[in-house]
Image (cartoon, rainbow, N blue to C red; front, side, top):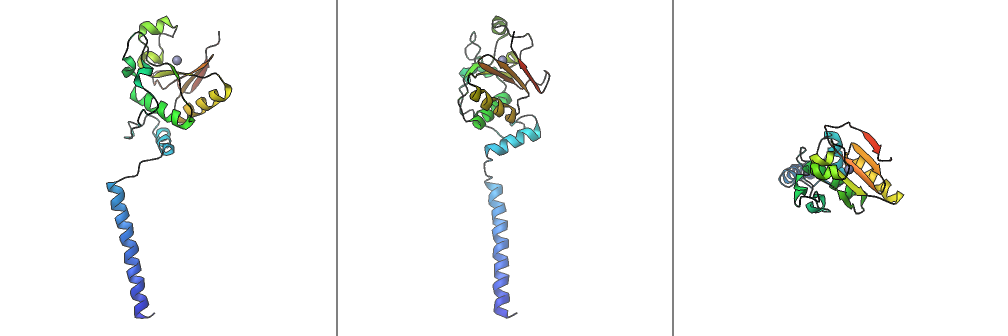
Length: 177
Ligand SMILES: [Zn+2]
């Protein structure tokens, strides 16, 4: 091998090594924001929540007021952050509006609307999303399950979802009388 060829090879190797090392340093300083798909993967791996994974999702498609118990304005703040994060992931996956029929419920309001005494709504873990068309129902259900909701209820015109760890997991119930 000629000396000049050897020198070109050596310079090329050093250049490649420098790019690799610099990329690693830049990535440490400015980590790329994970895509939604990665957030969901985090969820499913951790099995708990995005907050615990150290990743925060903005509640970009909802206003906290939508989760108020009607008898207590401002009570939407009692929703569990992890539940809201999971709901936002589901909303992003579904790509359609989620109209919230019910979020947090005071025990009094829960009783008034006929909720069970152990309702996840009273602990800020439950939401009811309006769903009438079969295609809408499918999209919402698919997204809720992908986002990690472990408890689903099918009602007339709505879907209940919660991630209350104190209640039976991986269940899909109905409200038929
Ligand atoms: Zn519900």
